[in-house]
Length: 110
Image 1 (cartoon, one colour):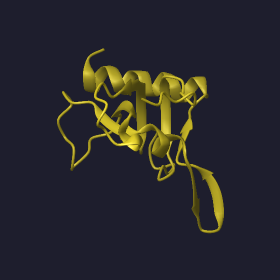
Image 2: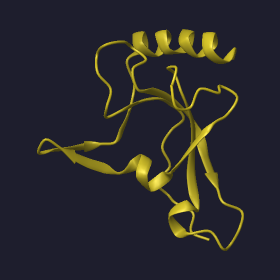
Image 3: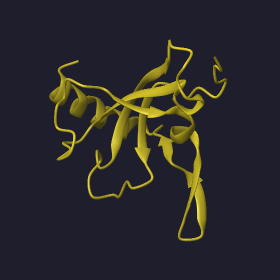
């Protein structure tokens, strides 16, 4: 089983689709990275990011579930409109983090 060395820090991230419409638009809390326990999983599914949205999603609207995404997809760079940038960017602004903490508590109670 391949264990990645490219592990992102837990915390808040914006997806590249984020706009300035609201602080939690395409904002996520990355909880950590999980490792698949079975040997017969595909290589791209061996390491999965565990995260949850900080906005109400019409598609995934059950706050009791965490979301999973292949680690390689989370950490990859994408190209859009001729520019290359990370698919997810860690949020480091203390004011935004404070606002997202409040939203997280309202949504999930923790």
